Image 1 (cartoon, one colour):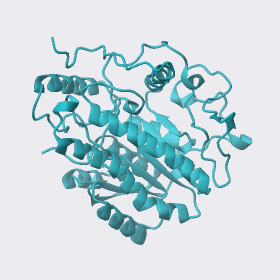
Image 2: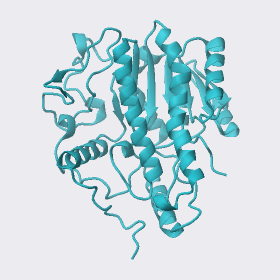
Image 3: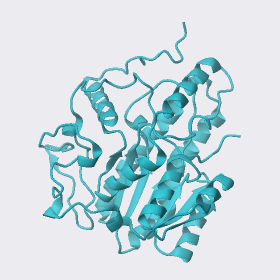
Image 4: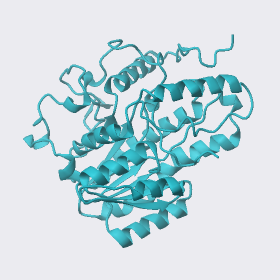
Length: 366
């Protein structure tokens, strides 16, 4: 039986994105910050010029690794040094959904073991999430397992109340739970479509609705990270339900970022766009019950093979939390891949061109 809240990763097979150096440098080679960054209560509002949002840095930058996205470590508002993960998150309370394996488990381990946080690890898979909680974690942190289905809004509300009553205010919410579905769109069973929507999209909404109101009320700065995917800024055949859900999640979080700025809440909101991260998302993906099963299975096997070369969940977790501490909005694990996908999509949309056929042979009907 496939899991309903397994962790996920944004994965694109070779050939689906422009080659290195192709096209334009999106955001001038740096991570795009949206119309504004979260700078705390009373921070800057979006800048507008002739009714058009200013979305890019004005200074050109070369494409650089995520660890050096700024020219100068003091290149932040107020001239202060870039805060560390420990300074921002150390010793606080975190909630991570889909924490039973993959990226969610890596995040839970990193938060507890390296940042000394108390981590509420939520997952529908009880044995998996309890195994994460039973691991030894250093730095004074710990992981507390909770069996929760993110599709259930009542269960998420009860979890939020229980966490606040037992542990106090939440400093960090990570909406990570997600699932895959492989196959031609016309072959996907309605129940499989609904499963992706309920977990990948509604699960994020339920997490925000359950935890964010109390986070807004708390005086101490808090953070909401939502795991989208590089698939949120590109398209791919044979993964329409997943790609659609990640586009929806990115739109939801971009709107949430604007809403938080509008009300002046001291909550940082970020969208995480990971590239290939080792996980079981494709092995746990729902199968196609009709249609071209062979094409779907070939695509799934190719994705699983690529994940064998992916970075580990623990590596990805460290990258994600470093950028979160620095106040990034678009957080990435594979900068060149994500920037190329963003540039290609922006170019296609401004030219009003249809998506090009995928260059790989997966699913091709000969």
